[in-house]
Picture 1 (cartoon, one colour):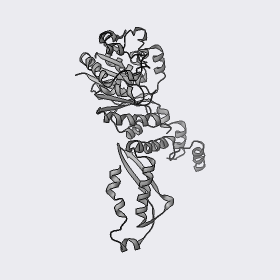
Picture 2 (tube, chains in turn cyan, brown):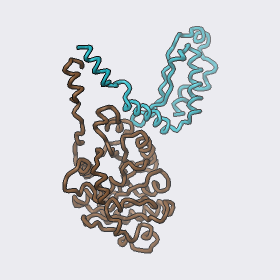
Picture 3 (cartoon, one colour):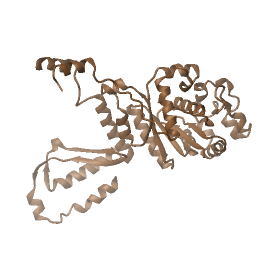
Picture 4 (cartoon, chains in turn cyan, yellow):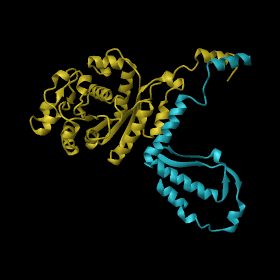
Length: 114
Length: 266
């Protein structure tokens, strides 16, 4: 039975994970997020770098799995960042309760930019 | 209270003019007094889709220049006395009129008709701005394709910015078989992305081409077509009725699916 099912699956793949329909939706969501915010790619790149540098002061990030994108839902655009943490840098947090580089970019200015 | 509705899309070729012709005609059939306005100066086509090209004498341009009265420029439909067409000038560019002139002209039409439909040109430049200037409502037409949806989204934003707040979505040329095969965005997909209220869905239908060949809007045809019925439903919704979307769902029990089911996969 399972052999026949496998065969059918192979002959007529269901393509559940990667259909062209999924792909077009994803591409549209990303491009519309950019269109709607009107945030040029270089600014987005600068934003990304600044956020990463701040986060990196506290934790060591897994650079392989980093994701950083604008997405929109119901005409609201969100900044989606997925920053996998490899380990926490205990030393930096304890030593400086008010880290000095922070005033460069706080949470509020991120939302303001969007 | 008359309604001035612009039909627009951003991208060209998605069905603005076809939709204008069919919605206008369907409403006229229901006894409403309707004016359809071609705002595509320089590239007019609405006269062709209505089969009225040989009756055009004056256009909106002459009416604006005072070379004729507005009534003289209005082309009465030969089949449906409730419908008139205000043709665009073919020999001028979109920059030859201004949003203010358009507002004035539409203001006069609004006193005489229940519905004024403005068929917008593609693009978001002067012609588009003229087309939306007088509108209080908008129908954004799109097809379930990436470029059309992106442009539609842009237009939705611009309509908002120009204080046209009553905007509805018309999804054209849906191919249910392709949606079932996950090779086309569904109605829900497009609606989720654009996030404006849905006015209707027109399935892809070869009869649309036949009807444009003849200059007879589908809704006039004696033999009903699926697209014609869909346009009729849109018009009923415009008139305030609650009409369910047509069920285009394709039988998912295809033979492959049936065989798979038989062998016990989910």
